[in-house]
Amino acid sequence: MRGALVMDQGALTWPPPPPPPPSPAAQQAAAEAAKAAADKAKADAAAAALPKDKWGEQLSSSVNMALASAAALALSALAPTWAFLGMLTKFSLASICGETTRPRSGGA
Image (cartoon, rainbow, N blue to C red; front, side, top):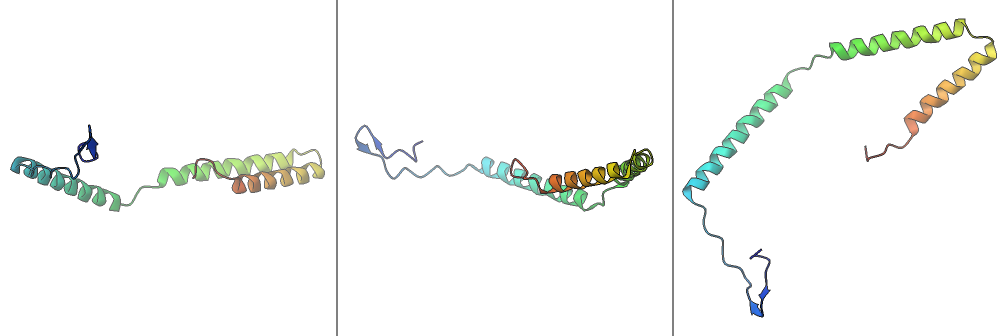
């Protein structure tokens, strides 16, 4: 607050007095904190360099695709007419196009 105060009850208080020099204990604590932060950043970088296991993601994606394909084949086998399949195909493609072109909210 003192650094931003220019006038106090009519008296000019600018420029503010220089801040007191830091004590040696504070400088040592700041150096230790900086060293700890550098060690943590180094450890985080080493952990990030390891390859991630994507087995679960790939398995989930493959199972979902297989189920969707099986559902599409079952629907086409049980469809009442070819016109129904044509309309279903157009609706599916329109849904995909609409989802990929809609604006995202939240700036993402």
